[in-house]
Length: 54
Image (cartoon, rainbow, N blue to C red):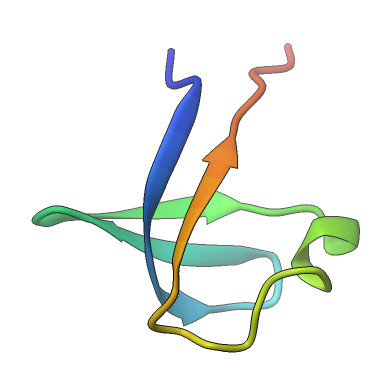
């Protein structure tokens, strides 16, 4: 399980962001309440604390 992920935002979409982590790009699903808090600067490094909910 991934507990944290840190990288640069490559692209913002409606319900997710594409996050560059080294040579790999992850699609991270983001709830709307968190999406509005994300910085508009796409070159900024950001860290997400993840939670796996079954």
